[in-house]
Length: 75
Image 1 (cartoon, rainbow, N blue to C red):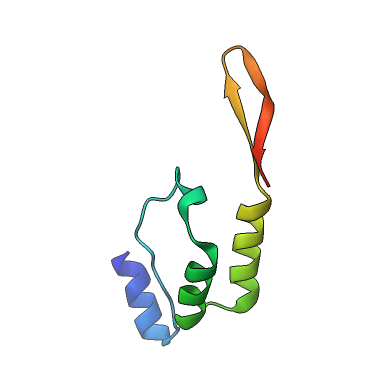
Image 2: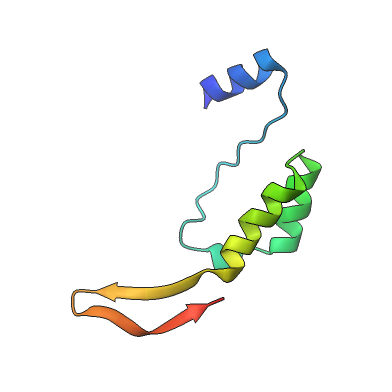
């Protein structure tokens, strides 16, 4: 992270580092609020749109030792 900050400072490139663990709670993120926060920090609109379209259209299927579940959720 220090290296990333250093590169951003030296190249005078705007950047954001988000240090949170959301690997198991993407469904709790308020997409509109986070998209606005990302845009405020300089993230291009296309990048924010791509990120949240991917999350909104994702379909989750549980994989177990007995095989894949028949039921999915998401999307």
